[in-house]
Image 1: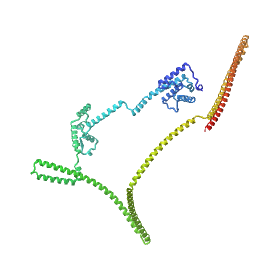
Image 2 (image 1 turned 120 degrees about the vertical axis):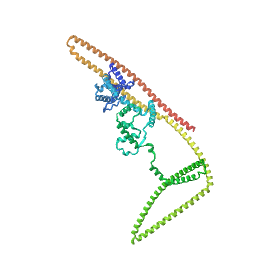
Image 3 (image 1 turned 90 degrees about the horizontal axis):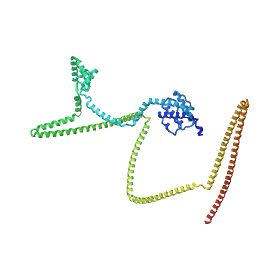
Image 4 (image 1 turned 30 degrees about the vertical axis):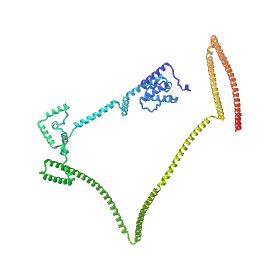
Length: 604
């Protein structure tokens, strides 16, 4: 079967040279599986061609699934697909599927050379993109030491740059009082520059100040200043002064205006008046006592008074804050209760409206019904009162019963202690017996496992009946295999006989054809006739010699057959003796078992 699966391959030196060149081309292109010595030439070459087609990145609607050590059908389908793809790729060399299957390397080499060239060109075109993508994928999850040092330097540089920006950044120096008067965009720009410290130079040059390191720009600004006339310079100076007059400093702008201060004072006016009156009284007392004390004593007293007043102010402020919090809580509670009151008021109004409706509906016709309803309502109220009283009685009774239970529990504590001791002793004995039972169960389980192991070992030993059955089955299988072998051998013999017959018949036909073709030419002259007869006699002698050889071979085969037949008869005789011996042995075993059973019965 293995010989049938092989293709008819031309084995000559040129094919070997081309095969080696194809392998070298594939290795140079990057297909390193061609180095594996265990792969067949078909797998190396076809695998390399499939790899080159995939590298070329051609848009084709064909699935090139290459598998090593594939079957003949898979190889044929794969070669046909490769040829179809080469046609779509516009390959300049023509190749047929049978040439790939037959490994015709002379015709495969130019196609592989063209594919390798195309693959190298495609890799050059897409190499930068693939490399950039691989670097990007690497950078997403990994970092090189250079990247780490760069990130550290970037962090330090960011901090230093932020410090520089904080120190040398633009700071607002002025603020315009009224920005609503700036209607033109140029005036707003000028005002903004003046607020951030851009001085008269902007009005003289029409551009903002430049840093000191930009010398060329500053020189050009100086040239522009020289170009301006004195009148324009004076006008711009006046504009600058007017703009500065409309500015206030940023520190002044941070101060609170008088209106804000007034609103703060009005919030605590009562407490401030009280404190101010106390402070004025203390000042008058100090003035009266000026003559009796020295200056040093007066300063000490004044400091104490000021400290006391400050402490009093802090206490009042705290009290005001507590009052504010209390006020907010009370306001929240008031809002909550007012909402509840409104709801109750609404319900009350609805009930009054309904009562008015009921009263309007009352007349002589439904007077009896209303009396009955009133009696039922009063009955309902009485029942509710009785229910409430009954519940109160139940609660009292439950409390009394619970107290009785507690008293009974306290009375029986001593009896319970004796019962607890007895129950503990019983539990102790129970635990000991339970542990003993558990040990016995474990021992029983171990013995059961040993018994099951021994039982399995006994079951593994076949009985005599089983051995006899096995022997019978093996004999049947042997006879079946022997019959199949004999049949196969006969088929081989028949095939060889028919093959030899065919060979001799073909020789005979060729001989007769040659005689028939040369007969007419040999009969033209006497010499050719004599030569033809000699040749014919030589042919007859050769046929006779072959006949003798075959008869001799036939006689040898007969002798060999007779010898094998004698050996077979000897074996049959030995088999008969073996079966007879086995039968006698079984009979003796049966007698031995009978005698043993009799001996056992006699001893018992």
